[in-house]
Image (cartoon, rainbow, N blue to C red):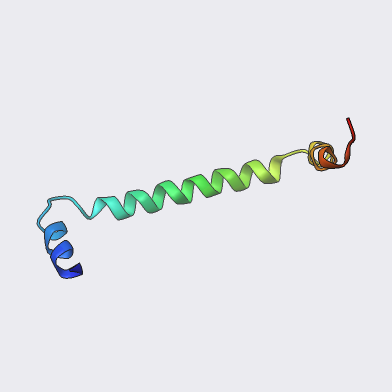
Length: 56
């Protein structure tokens, strides 16, 4: 079954760009997410971590 799918994909012109494009999208997403996490202020993280412990 995989050979049939592989054959169909090989006949499409320019199909090799899709794996490269998807890898690039995921890489950029995780780099931006990492930059956002490391730039987040420590005070805000501590405030958010106390929310489950606060009684209303």
